[in-house]
Length: 429
Image (cartoon, rainbow, N blue to C red; front, side, top):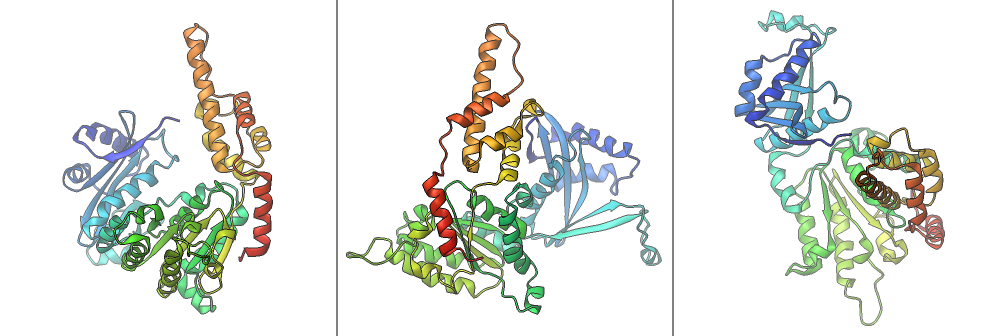
């Protein structure tokens, strides 16, 4: 599949816009806004395009009106539909319009089943069968500066759906976290207190960070990752910088805060002399209760070595759930492999065989093996091309199996056994 990217609209993109406009008309649907209005908005308002090479394959144009933004046109090339182009365009438009102080973005689209007779009586012109859609912008204008200072961002809304397999983990997270956090009034009616902090644990490379980002994406909350190594470089020291970061986070209405490899700053205390991280552990233990006092926030800590965490860190009252994230199951491995097989090899690779042979692989292991197979195929193609032979279209099943056999797995049998023991002793779901 040819790669495509998103960028701002440029004057030279006008021809591409006209092509998409004519494709829209060819469907028999009359656009809500006139072409002249759309072109005017590309010059004075906000417009974003998706391009594949030099070809414009998608356009979205937005116009602000007081605290509301309107999508005046969105179109994607008929050969690129159902590939996520429209979703990416809308997300990019929202990102660019949010600093204007908008509270929501709305769009009118044709629909033969809707009639608004009441508006006719009030003097509005009937545009013939329109439906009204809108969504709230997750981050308000006054929060954008804080989010930038923290290095946070709003993630695309499709990360949750992109996690293939791992259904047990997804079910737990959906029921325990997403449901009460996204519907707090319903949770309160049933006496459920939405979680405020969780721990994800498991062997290295099993996707804990991926799940943390997917949770933020599913909730549509900003995602802020705290990097202890970066905080340690501050003049205030790691503990002071950690405290300052949590104070900044307090300015956000909703947020998912993520700390990876938390064992680095929450290890077992004690010993003579005290470890250098003991003060940081104490500070973090004091920050968590204050963080939990406010709704609309979730702390996710991830660790590869849960046995190394201080005992007080995991107790009830600080973390609501301690959730294991293990190696991908067969369904997840199939989805990961499918995402790494290039279009040229689609239908020519026995993915089922790759899934079976990669049992015990982490997502990172699969990615490494896939890249190795692609590199092997590329080098062979170049060599055969130089010798005057036909060039192969992409990696073969044998390329992938060879790469699998040469890949050293991240998770050893001992680590996998320790993980199962940790589930029995420490998991809390």
